[in-house]
View 1: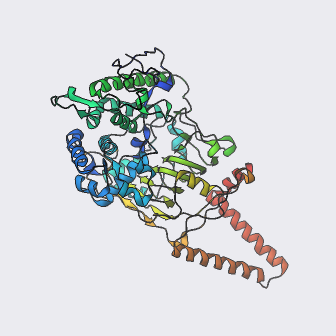
View 2 (view 1 turned 135 degrees about the vertical axis):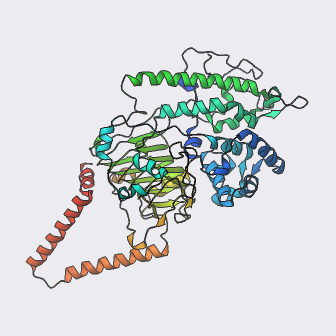
View 3 (view 1 turned 90 degrees about the horizontal axis):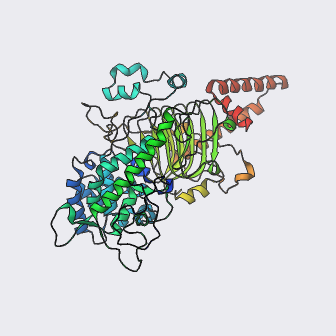
Length: 578
């Protein structure tokens, strides 16, 4: 088996050896990796996007779109017509594709929200996006310390008395405690998918050679078409770091920029990529083997449930990919940008805690949490909240997807419609209700607009997720997911983020950058007025001084009782500890 290569420095663009620089000890920089973003944030449970035979459907679709699109781009109207889906779903496809594209210079990524339709998606990126809608997610693992999980995960809920009336799908949800597969397992699963489907994927990008037959050997890939594979794969631990994907391929590397590179037979590209994928899978297997008999690495371990305050809890950085915050229990945790090793974060299996992630991010995932409040600063691409119970999420983001959650509330400043998929119960949405000093700076950095907030326009898709084997048991027909209701205006309160760091993180934000809807603003003003009147009545109460002291003491006792009953006393202790 040949090993993968680093970008070559030779000028031989006509080389046909798929691996001219074999290396018995592959450098991790040279290994091929799947891009996680399309698989984690780019899958849509829309039945008309999932094809029994993707190539048989997508090749004619591509030809039709190309013949009708002189600029090789397609808007939502053309997409709606060609796929026979609603305009809302067609626009959702464009928005989702834009959030997971590999190139920030793509016109679709750079477009303002109002310009996305007129810009349209590149047809070759689109067909790759549509092809991977057939991907099946890796089954969730069980936790290595089931006893610890059982001890902190709540065993009762308002729903538990109704299990006998639930459908088989709902029973699967209620009886499972799900834990996200390790990064290594997910990467191996995604690589295996690409390995199996590589020939089909290349056929979507390849062009037939004029004058030859219609067989496989007549297909070639230009360098421009090859670059579209960057949507699904990358080289190096941190991606290609701005290096075009073609510079890692011996048949395109260092081609003369003034001369078009010679197209390469699709079979040659196929063989070269298969060799690199096989080497990467072998490397992952070797890396995973010691973990079965030794301590896990930081990026894959199951962190024991912590009962400590933020000073003793660490976010877990990975060599590549997101930072991890996992297993926080009965604690408060604060992380700023300098504490996170990259632009993505995953919050996993946290319970009965308050977590502040005050940073500009590209992607965020919240998975398997319960009874927790999570503040996520500014997310420029997408945030996904999945398999959570009684969680409050406060975030300013370009887009959010909520999947298989119950009794959760979302306080949102979002530029696109909140997407709700899977088996959800009693979800609430509300306008964004907090701020911290650097919020607007972070929003500007990642491209979240404060003038657009579509928090109250949730888009609900189907209950059955065809990408998830556990949520798609045999015999369960699909119905529209339960949508979210709006939080009553008199129930919205401002969420105060303490200023732990003072001058260390000074910023210009002094108030909530998202304007409150009139009905919520009026309710807040009314509540403030009522509170002021109560304070004035207490101050002016015709009581003797000793009676006033008794009243003040009683109020303090009741407040302290509430702090203990609600669990908020622990957060105060943790904040004091900082």
